[in-house]
Length: 310
Image (cartoon, rainbow, N blue to C red; front, side, top):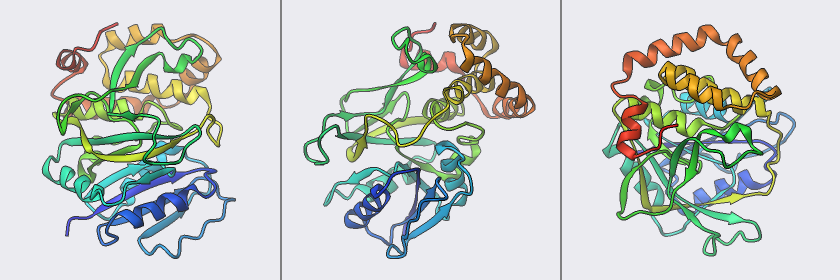
C-alpha cells in the first residue's frame, strides 16, 4: 500500500488541531497515513490518544513553523509527505488523499500543490468558501505593499485557475503541498529558515533549479481557515532574514545585490543582516551545495514563466 506522512505544526490553535485531524479521519483511509502533529507551545495540553495514527511531538521551545515542517519531514516514516496547517478541513467522498499519493508517486521531482479553498471571515462552511486559489506566481520585486517591507521582494502571489486538471505553476502556496521525502531532503528543504515566510518560493525555486517542477492538481481541494490575525507573534526581522537568506544562497550575486538594494534599510533589515552575518559560514556551505546540484538558475525560471525581472 502506498502511504503518506502528513506533517502538521501548530501554535496556539485551540481546538483546530483536533478538528483538522478528525476531518482527515472522516475523509481518508486511516491505513493510508500517519500524522506528525508538532505543538510549538509547551504549555498547551493536547491529547491525541484516540487517533492511533497521530505521532504527537511537543517542542520545548518555539522553533518556527518552517523548522517544524523540516523536523516533521525528517521524522516521517513514509516515502511520501504532505504538509498542511492545523486549521484545514477536507472534503468527504472526494478521494483526496489517494489522489495526493498518486500524484507524488508518479512524478518524483515534482512539488504538488492543491486547491486552497478559503474559509473564515464569517464562514466555516466548506461548500460556501470565499474563493479558490491555485498555487502562486512569483514577484521578484513589487512596490505594492509598502506597509509590509518584508513582503516586497521574492514574494508568492496567489494564482487563479488555468485550463487543465493539472499543470505547471511557478510556486506552491497554501500549506497543502506534497512531495517525495527523498526529494525534499535532497533539496535541503526549508533548512535554516526562521519563523515562516518565503518557504514556498525557496523550495519551489530550488526544485526548479535542480531539474524539477511544481504543479497544481485542480481536482483536490482543501478548505483552509484564514483569520484576521495570527494567534502568535512574528518578528518581522525573521521574514526579512528569510528573503535575504534565499538571495544569498541560490541567486546570482548581481541579482542578489539588486534585490537587497530594494529592501528598506530599517531596524528589521539591520537585525536580519546581523543574523545573516551570524550564519555566514552556514550560508557559504549551503551555497556551495546548491551550486553542486543546480542545473538551472533564476534567469531560466523567469524565461520559462515569463516573470518580470527587476
